[in-house]
Length: 318
Image (spheres, rainbow, N blue to C red):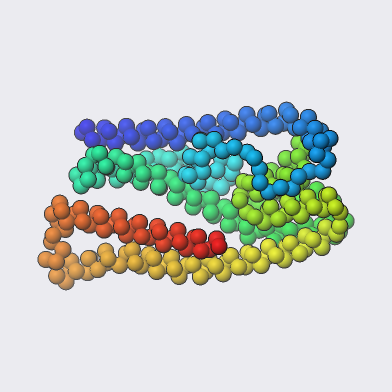
């Protein structure tokens, strides 16, 4: 009973911690928005007098407080609430349930001193996986729509429309989720932010380098002039090739992920088959020592699968 109480308290503390972090970030986000709207005119006027033309640098000097780093570790982005198919409270509760279940079942194997940390880590792992999956799905949909958006902008510019109207056509005619990102970007432009800086904010939210390419292109065109339609057309061709290359890399990585899954499941399938053919070979796993060995084997299998998956992801990014 005491162990269950401790695990319940740990789960409640985990839920309270994650909920408090997310609430704190949302409150800070609303406060920063009010400050930005209040000071937008003065800041833009001072920048225009002192610096002249807008900057197109990719790096920013924004600090990352501890709360934002923790949320970044959990793969939760408060600037993109539309990416969440499952509301974040449900994800937090699911992670807490998994953590309590894991820790409660591990007490008799590894003791309460290790069961509680393992349960908390497993709950955080579930929360991180859920947020990361939803974020990756959202970013992938945005990434596949970028060539169409730039192509639509090229056609609008060639028809004689200004850049702002071309972006409004993207926000009105393209499907979600890229339409929502362009709508937010146009909102930044409406309060006085330059187009290239507003586009750079889209890059900061999504971390897609294609938006930084587009921001640099728009900033260079605003500073030096030139044929914007031709420049955007070349950029659209480059982005289209990058999308095709990413799809090819994903298809090639699917085979490696499938092989990693087979390597993880194969020992347990072999044990199941052995239990039907020669049951006495696995009778030792019914003892406490055998159960600990099986648990260690499962942990190493999961760890190996995660390492292989991480290596595949890094290879795809390179």
